[in-house]
Length: 452
Image (cartoon, rainbow, N blue to C red; front, side):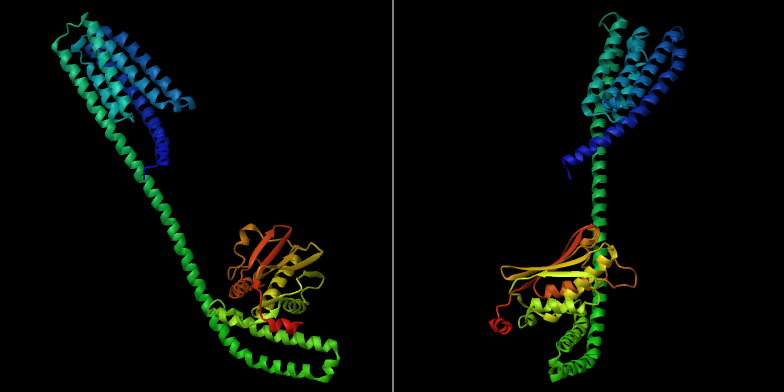
């Protein structure tokens, strides 16, 4: 993991690191410089006042640099400002060496201490540290030359220069490896953060999988319950169906259009009862698509039946439709009637909840190659964006507690999926909502002739 983004992040962190350590180092340097007045008093009492003044001036200059670091300008130039406050004590020490004992002055130790500090404590770069070491050595040479009045210097000068050069070399090595260690530590932290993010995503995925497994268990339980209900309900429904069939054939019923229509609706209602329980099994046991190949029906008649069956819910609701002349499709008519009942019922509830009359539902259908694409659109309050992707989830509902299980759209989704289509939702919040699905065209000529 070594990317430009990683290096950019490291540069930002390193800037903060250098700022913090440079401030701390500057305050430490001020303290050491002022404590050196005791050393001046012991070694060079005759220079006490001059050296004290120099120490105070240098300390004040370093403090000004620290103040500059608090500004945006200074924070953007932290490396240069750190170099400045470090070089100030070196200049002061060099001047003290020049006016005291020259090459034999003990003050050269202070220059060595500053060199080590730049490489070990402060977050200097390699080239910065090397330049600082070279300048420190040159300052020492200049101080010794000034004190001796020329370059005829004693052997202690050579020894001290060698120590300064070795200190600068060791400091440069420390700087190089400290820099590598800091980058490796930052890289390790970045990798740990990335792994933590991946772990959180994995945990979230596992939680989703666990939820899906629990959902599947619920669906399996519902499927088992639905199978038992279907077995118990089928007998009384069959009795009702037989009675309705006999009533339909009665001459008196045939003579009354109203009675014939009511009996037809009752028959559709009994078929719906059968399919309500049967469709619940969709979640646990999917039916084979082959079983839908033999079913053919006119979508127009399914829509008319659905509208009649929800008539008690659609009072004061205008329902219009625009359908092609031929609406012969393949599938299970009763199941599609159930889907339409659910979509129409949801649309009515949504519009009444919004309470902005007039209430209008528009059903349109058009052929797209061999698919009949149907849209059920209402002028209700619409669906919130955060709910739009979840409306087909089992048990998801925006209704009040106790007013619905949130299974209607999920069941309808499964029914359309079994028919080889897709049920989708569109909406503009506060304006409208539309449920769209498609069915396959039927090529059964016998049914077409029968419908004609």
